[in-house]
Image (cartoon, rainbow, N blue to C red; front, side, top):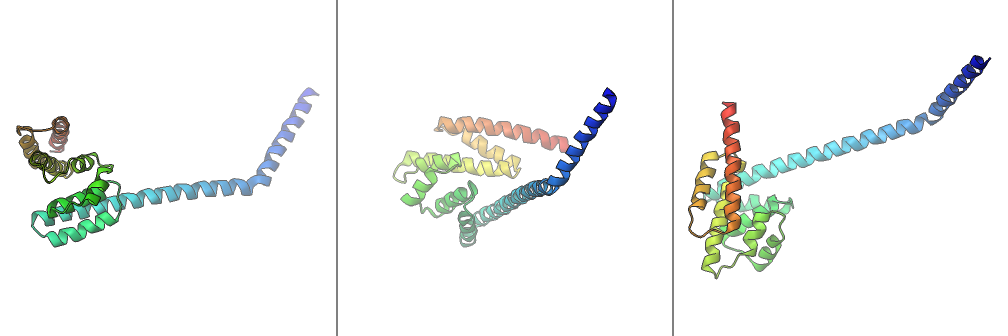
Length: 199
């Protein structure tokens, strides 16, 4: 008798579960649909941001190539595009490059770059003073540091190493740059090791 009661209770429970599922099927499907849509939107946004970063990075490399080839007008057009894109770091870097190569820093530009999320650009801007010979020397060191960073980023190991050695051998060099040069050299060691493994 107790077995029969238990079977009946189990059947009643199953029926309640089935009826709950049937009654709420549309809600479940809606919740699943919304979840999938949110995931799809997130992945699309991430992919879009990644493509945008790659595109801006490629443009920045092209601008640097134009500057090195003394095609300043072409370089400035590309740098303006990057500045207008309002990227969290590349736009500030483009603004710095544009003004440093034109020697056209205004107080407005300096104040903007002092608040940059890119620490190196913020440092460069905070010490900018065209009337100070010592500061000008530090600016040249920091400019060399940025060029070394570009070489590291684009896997130009020999060029980066040469620039870092040049920095290291300077008589007057701020401690902040010394510490960063040590860190960059460690990065170069890792990159050299990775490149040797690929061969």
